[in-house]
Length: 205
Image (cartoon, rainbow, N blue to C red):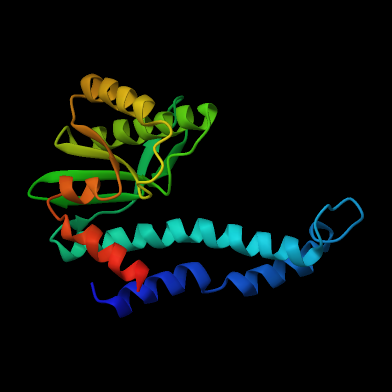
């Protein structure tokens, strides 16, 4: 992927409409930014809001980015919305996946997060969510699935041991290979290691 395409994806997702949406939010909810019980000044609160929004959208941009890289390397992206019935089988809902692609009759399921820094409650929820998606995918596509629990930032691995143990249990229970990956490891596992080097080069440009 050339730098211009890479940069356009980030600009569109991270900066695209963030300021306009912030202004709408101020107009609709001014009490969030003003008041004697606010320890921060309005300007500081505005900056916090903008930076938090950019953090979230940075992750969204990476979702699109990885999808584009998978396409470039002959993976065929599939619909990220998978229909399923809730536990009572009364209501049909849909699960939203981060990445789902097919190559050579294998389905690649990737659950991606920016960084591994969750507390104990949230990490349990992440695994439960991953298992629910895995179960639905196996129901739809059979067991020819490879699953990845992926953290983009390789510098943080707070819950690495926990995730490894849980994924190993799920792999045995469901009979499909599951991997925990940080940074470059995902692309090495997919046999496209050069992608990570390109990502780092473009981010540093």
